[in-house]
Image (cartoon, rainbow, N blue to C red; front, side, top):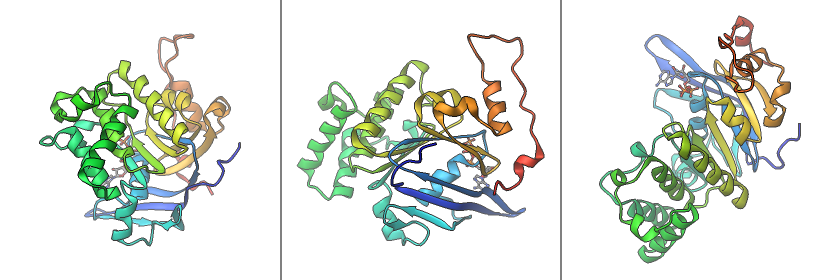
Length: 284
Ligand SMILES: Nc1ncnc2c1ncn2[C@@H]1O[C@H](COP(=O)(O)OP(=O)(O)OP(=O)(O)O)[C@@H](O)[C@H]1O
């Protein structure tokens, strides 16, 4: 499988450990991967550690969490030793994040245009007028038809799909080179999902940036991403080109593929994924 050229993100043996009253919990148990100018899917069932992997890269984890890694390098920044001040210039500026539901990410008492403008002013240190112009241009880039009208709307006045376009505009205004999207379409109607994926694809390709796409929907990741990391119980059990998924070797990946509903070969019952305790063993 062709490796992406010049990875912007290089992760080796990343662990995320939570201190809890019942003792330490290892949510991520030694994952290694690189990410270049590509769409990298991270797939796995609930609790497999996908979100914690993305958040570890942003160093956006609860205080009870500890990040341990042999390497956690983003471009010229060593994320494991960067100071909080350095991280502030990485988060939002060089790595953008899109979450599942724009409703919870937007400030309800500020117009959406103002919120995007604030991002531009904060990250790019531009004046009010220039921030406004950049905001209108961004709204246009995410294919919002009437940017001047939408600029003045409040979050409760926009639909889910429009809200996600606004989140994408807000994240793009600082021109990040990496986007982490955590289930960005899960809260959207099926009819709007495709449009948001199309927009993300257009942005990644036209800007030549990297995308970490976290999802539990194997069908979506298979058709949208270039490569896929399959996570199980805090580990990556397989890394494979999306186009090669049919040739997956790990029994968990094979089980996931077999469990997908199919239109061309309907079955009375879906396949049940049989788990093997050996999948919990370290992979290297
Ligand atoms: N604050 C916390 N304290 C202790 N354990 C936590 C905490 N947050 C998450 N975890 C544990 O970390 C593990 C991985 O969680 P994570 O959110 O990364 O899973 P996920 O694969 O993204 O799942 P989902 O698809 O449901 O979001 C889970 O087993 C979870 O219980």
